[in-house]
Amino acid sequence: MDYLNNKYDVIVVGAGHAGCEAAISCARLGAKVLLATLDVDHIALMPCNPAIGGPAKSTLVREIDALGGVMGEAADATYIQMKMLNSSKGPAVRALRAQSDKKQYMDYMRNIIENNENIYLRQACITDLIVKDNTITGAIDEYGIEYSARAVILTTGTSLNGKIFVGLRFYSAGRLGEKAAYGLSESLTKHGIQIKKLKTGTPPRVDKRTIDYSKMSIQPGDETLHFYSFKPNRPVRPQYPCYLTRTNEKTHEIIKANLDKSPMFQGLIQGVGPRYCPSIEDKVVRFSENPSHHIFIEPEGLGTYEVYIQGFSSSLPADVQVKMLRTLPGLENAHVIKPAYAVEYDYVPAVQTTHSLMSKTVKGLFFAGQINGTSGYEEAAAQGLIAGINAFNYLNDSEMLELSRSSSYIGTLIDDLVTKDIQDPYRMLTSRSEYRLLLRQDNADARLTPIGRKYGLIDDNQYKIFTDKQDAIEKELQRIKDAKISATEDVNSILSEFGEHMERGMKIAELLKRPNIDYSVIKKIDDTTRELNIPFDVAEQVEILVKYDGYLKRQEFQVEQASKLDKFKIPDDIDYSSIEHISSETRDKLSKIRPKTLAQASRIGGVKPADISILMVILERHAYSRV
Figure 1: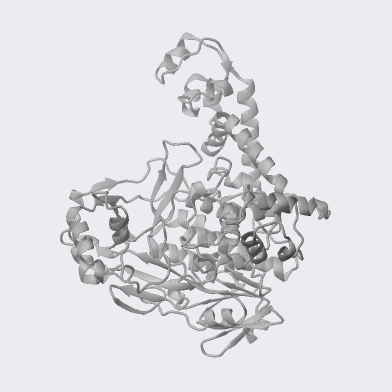
Figure 2 (figure 1 turned 180 degrees about the horizontal axis):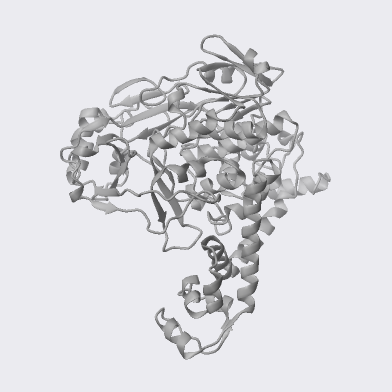
């Protein structure tokens, strides 16, 4: 067996959320995978908040599940609280969030990995890549051991040349308690890949026995449970609350008085931090008009007293952190288990990769997760899944999976990364998608399960569950379009409870369009609907399709219009420098990113609409293919 001689099909470097999805997807498709990690006891670690999902991120998790990934399944199996955020708002912005048991989540993911006979786990620091003729052939670890493979996926998180800061003190580490990875950045540079630096951070952890929860607002989970995975028989587990407290004037005074001890404000950290998850000192300075900021107290798991102080990320000295924490209601006697810290690390700007997440410079080399300039477990897992599928496709000379912006948040995420010059850690937001009404968390299976099936990660049983659900949706849609409810006195008596009234009989679908009417009301006034007992996920889809029919059609039209630019294919060998009538900035951007279509070119930062018009004329004049 070749793997006994360190010969594999794929090497995955790093076993965080990206690495786990990459290794598992590759292995399930049939590849022999070496999964190399700095610490086998930290597989699928949540180094920041112990939670999965939230706005936009929940859609990513559902999409991962629909394609055949494992994050949603693991989150469902290990939650200690489930909560639907924005539940009173429209379906495009509703977001499921699971508070996870950190240890159980790690154990669940490790169990999947260790029970897959195609994954070979190894604690090793990969320090060099083996490249021949601009093609990856393997990797070398810190002990000089060589591993051969035709594809390598780098999912190194924050470990590349990582440096941790607590106040003005710093030391080499990728995460607290873990060593940094050295050598690989230099190897990438040697092979023509550009390296830059980013920064992120995490809050302190506190002993819950030293917290007075009576001074805080309780944040319970939902009574009606929702789940991430589209698989059946998901576990119903006891739920545990989170709590809410706030900063105050005293907190802000301490922060402002100690900014001279902040590595960010003293210029010791060169990397740009996450815009949408700033440190508490950053919040206090940038939003000085705010008298206080929300701080959430979240359990790390059932088998520990450790709690996570959400919203209190900091790089100030440890003693200052204690003083700050003890100004918060309920944390006056808090004992800090782990201090907050900032970490600066190397990353590879993703404009150097294709939409398949393979390097444009080195064939067979893929990147996923924070190494691409993103933040968040969900973003990492989504990229890991796509990189894993495409590494397998690369091995087999198969069609690469490149999701479009109109198909998914995953497609939007990757398109943003590879066509825009990201300057700070990228976070997926609903506002990043121009098609968010179509790309909801509730319909991820309808959009992506057929694709997951095509690429081999959705088995027969799961596909039948999917097709049965879609058939049920179509059947119920047709039924309510045909079935009529009479405007009887009894019906109007019930409708009056919801501020509604019927002057005449009408079809159920017509009545369901009204804002105050949902399936629970239809069940009260229609015997057939009540007797059919439509499953929740089917009823949810039918209700959304009926209520938002006009908006959905409008957005589908937008997709159709935008797709016209996708039909203009740009040849690989086009010489942008020879095009005289477009700006030099546009020429430079197009030469660097080399978009495949006019649509991709139009989304590149700095490319002007007028230049796109000129490029379109040139493509048509020279009869470049339009398909």
